Amino acid sequence: MKEILIDTDYIKLDQFLKLVGFVQTGGQAKIIIDEGNIIVNDEVAFQRGKKIRKNDIVEIKGYESFVII
Image (cartoon, rainbow, N blue to C red; front, side):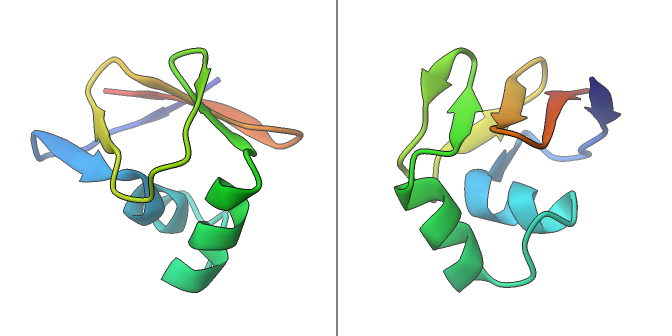
């Protein structure tokens, strides 16, 4: 599991996917999220604007897991 440091209170899920280099654009992020491929704290996330905060665990199915620090 990789650790990702953020220096704000939260980051939106679509921006997080761009930050870790999984997608290049918001449109790509929307597709990945809509397909149910993102799990945040053991729940499938379908909201592009979901707030990801410190200590959250984000899993991209078939790719990688991240913990926010």
